[in-house]
Amino acid sequence: MPDIDLHTLLTIVALGVVTVITRGFFLISDKPWTLPHWAQRGLQYAPIAALSAVVLPEIVMSQGHLVQTWMDARLFAAAAGALYFFWRQGVLGTIVTGMAVYLPLHVGLGW
Image 1 (cartoon, rainbow, N blue to C red):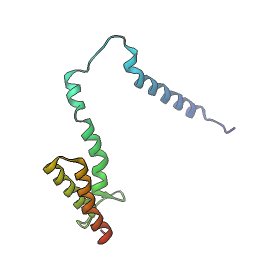
Image 2: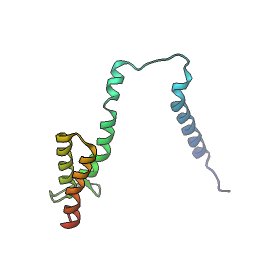
Image 3: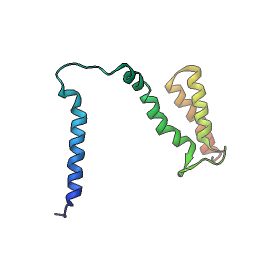
Image 4: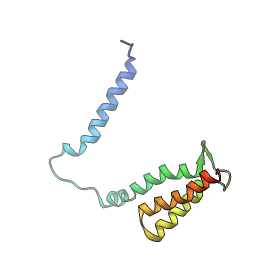
C-alpha cells in the first residue's frame, strides 16, 4: 500500500465534508424558505453566463491564444448560428446552420 501523505488525506476529507454540507444544505432546515428577489433575478442569468464562459473561448481562441486571422471557420459558423437564432429562435436550426457553415470552411478550405 502506498504511503498516504497526511495533508493529502485531510484535504480529501475536508473536500468531502464541504461537498456533503453544500449539497445537503437545503435538507437541513425543516421550514420552507425562498431566496430573496435579487438572488432569484440574478440566478436567471446563470445559464447564459456559464454557456458564454465555456463557448466563447472556444470560438475566439486557438492553442491558448486569440485567433490572429479572419480565416477561421469557427468565427463564421458562430456568426451564422447567432444570426439564425436571432431570426428563428430555434436551437436545432442554430446548430445545423453553424455546422453547415463550419464544415465546408474547415474541411473544404482547410480553415
